[in-house]
Length: 406
Image (tube, rainbow, N blue to C red; front, side, top):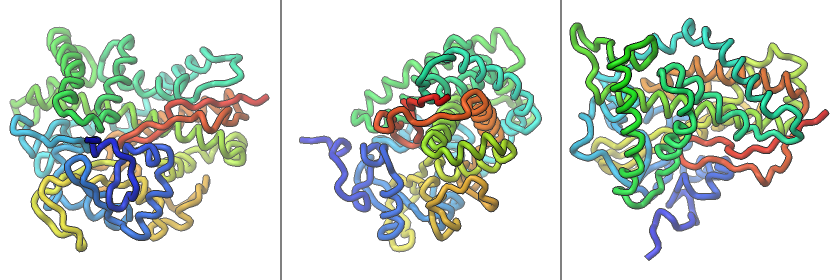
């Protein structure tokens, strides 16, 4: 019998799959269609789930911690078992934490991602971007994904966590396992795939306990959640996983999507080259129009959501990127407007789980794009059909061949 998770989708309103090749290649027509005729789509895949595509519904669910839990946020074929961390904490706090513990866990990491410590990284990020471009100097075609975007977030996150820079290639593999391997039908195999991740992070924690230093890992090991009470090993482990995975794939994808857009729209590239002051506003539009992240929830108990009979432990895949293109929420939602003045997008999420690392993501995007277009003020897609996109809950170009123009 053919595995249901591998069948091509015929109707996304009744059988959506965010790993389906059609969705992966170009999800926007799918979301537009769903928003118009079935704004809360259903699927039996992954054990059952729902996909809201309207901004109104996405926001409502994201802000509803009474009926929806965040104890796991990546859609897959399994559910948290009895041996999983308690529901208020979750596997990767604070993103998998429910109130009231969420507020406590989030408060602990906010200082590391505040504007001052993040802005202090700018010169190092810029220098690293220049080094990446030096490596491909003189090439007629540069891969914006494989030569450039994929390297930047791992370098930044590994430095923040105090991990060896030589291990950066492992981090990209870890991201793939966590976020792109969700369609693995055998749960035991998926658990087995996580083993190298667990071993690596355990080794790093042990090393930091023996050799403390001034980095985020040592901070997590020493910070007190309450007076005299440090974080549990599971909490430290989960938060490190969160910082690594969320800090790499999302920004890698956002940088890549922005380069894809500029390579496809010479008029926008020319404006950024000639009007560099537009960059901060442009970044917000890149984030809105190409928001990389969808995030999951689980239904706590059977619940009727606007006439949709949701069952306990059904998945909710929150369509933040779809919400960002909802014409009821944005004027000319289907148009990329590089100098859009009003732009309250949902790229970093909505509700209590809004991304704590948004300052870092914006900085990396700005520096990466400024560096790239300064070095290459004119470029285009070398082969649009050769561009490949990641599957799962974070979308961005992986192979992105760009032709450098004189």
